[in-house]
Length: 95
Image 1 (tube, rainbow, N blue to C red):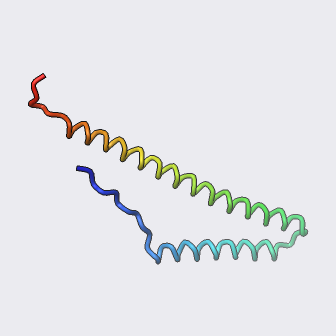
Image 2 (cartoon, rainbow, N blue to C red):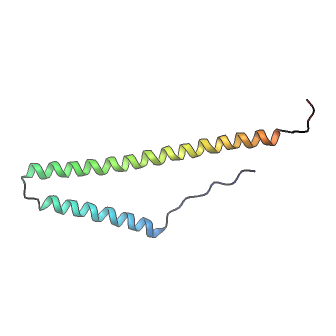
């Protein structure tokens, strides 16, 4: 009665594009901070800020993904309960 869950997979091209985009953006920011006409303290602060932003973005993406997976599991459990109730229900049974 229940349908198997659909596996969501990304293509290699999408994965490669995401990795390349990330590498280019980090490289561009690093070069920009390196060539910035400011003191070492300012460049260091900006580098730490970019590092913090990057790690917090990864953490946020993981938390959102984990929450979505939990909601899918809860939804499947609820659907299994409904399927069981419907399978056990006999509308022609005498009370």
